[in-house]
Length: 223
Image: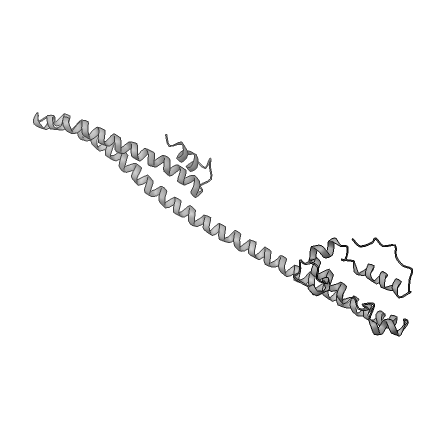
């Protein structure tokens, strides 16, 4: 009888609110059975009490009262157990809510730490990018002094690769960073599919080849 209660309170199962609620259902079933038993006993014994009182049979009256008290005590005991179980369910819920709050706080703290680390990584990457850009810009200015004035004036070559950098940022961040105008009206997907997203070192090689500074690289044709 009441196997779920026995398992929980002998620690064979964890005392969780869910487990306690299952046990409460079992105990509620016992309460309903006790109520039915009390009604049966009352219906049976009350009629007998009338006869015992009429016969002035004290012994029979005592026995009948004991039977009624036993049935009532069984019900009262279960009702009291239900009250105690409800209190434990509430305590378990409070403890679980506190644990869930602790878990949520820990998860938020973990996410915040990882976000800060990502920001640190971005800062380092930006510093590295800016340093590389300064070096590239200095070298580009020197290149401009070695090529024809026409190329410099017409800007047939993007000496600072700003469009290439913007295209890289736009494509690799789904448009969150970079200048979308650098994609020349294409969507990010179209720009990539047409082979127009080229790594910066490759762009520099192509520029050098167009300027006659190095042999032309063996490049695949854009789709």
